[in-house]
Length: 173
Image (spheres, rainbow, N blue to C red):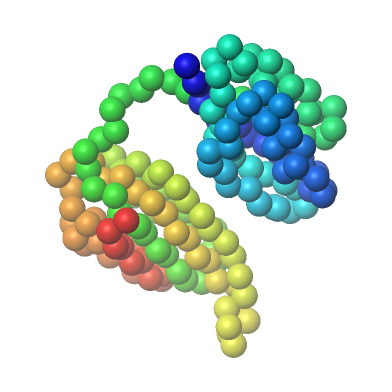
């Protein structure tokens, strides 16, 4: 029987970190299922999901934690039996506007008040073409609670978009 391990990774960015992770997983017969990895402020940061035979999971966890000696901090969490996924719709949110402190805080507060689960969030600040000021962009996959529609959420977020002077688009995910 298999078990899933969710890994959180951080360390100084340098060549070979992904190879080290993949070799460690492969040495225990683990399957690399899903990952998100990036260089952020000179650091390597990532999330990784692997599956492994239950009887090999403890040894894999120990080997992953030993990577700290090589400068890579790894936090390992085993899968949990949780409640079944809610039956609400999935929606993709795109946000763009001039960068300013508080955009993510205000957006996440508005979503939390409506009991919307943020399943994935990606954001970045770039230079706006021809304007030269900082442009904030975010993309999120959301799970709406049962009974809340995309159109109702759009109406709810119109005021927030106006207050933040950003554009928010919603589409089915």
